[in-house]
Length: 183
Ligand SMILES: [Zn+2]
Image 1 (cartoon, rainbow, N blue to C red):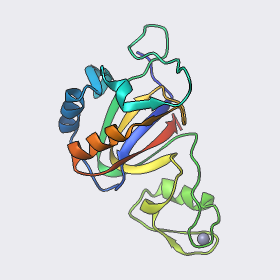
Image 2: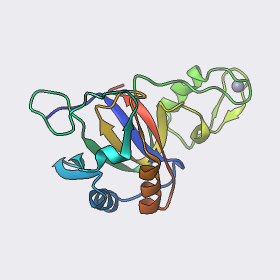
Image 3: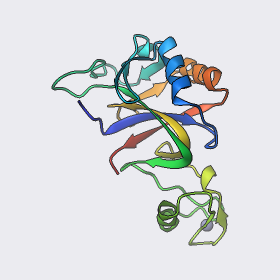
Image 4: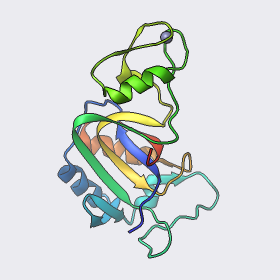
C-alpha cells in the first residue's frame, strides 16, 4: 500500500476543538468526500472529492484511486486525546510577535516539551502563546486532522464549500496546511 510523503491537512482553527472519528468519517462518507476504507481510518477518495478540492496547476497529474505501482491520493483521519503538534520537513519557523525575530531556538523547547507550557522568546524574552503562532501553513496544533495524501505544497486548496461542510459537520471552523513527512 502506497504511503505518501506530501499532505494537504485540514484541521480546526481552534486547537482545542475536536470531533470523533466515527462521526466525521460517517459525515464525510455521506457527502462523498471519502469512499471505502482502505486501512484503519484510511479511505479512498470519494466520488465528489474533486468538487471539494481545487487543484491550482493547469493539469494535475494525480491518481485518484489506489494504484498497485504508482503514487495515489487517499485520506487519513486522525484524532488524539491530547492536542498534538503536526508538522513536517517543510516547517516554516514562526516569528515572535514582540521582536519579530525567528523563534527557531524556542521551537526546540516546544518540541521537547509539547504545549500548554508557555515558551519565552530567546531574543526578547517575552512569553509566547504557542497556540497562536503563525506557521504559514506548515504546522499546526490539533486534536484532530484530515490528511489528504500525495498533495504537494500549494498544489491544491480546499474549496469554500468543503470548509463550510466541515463547519456544518463539526460545529467549528477549519483551515489547512501542507506537511512533508516524515520529519
Ligand atoms: Zn521576541
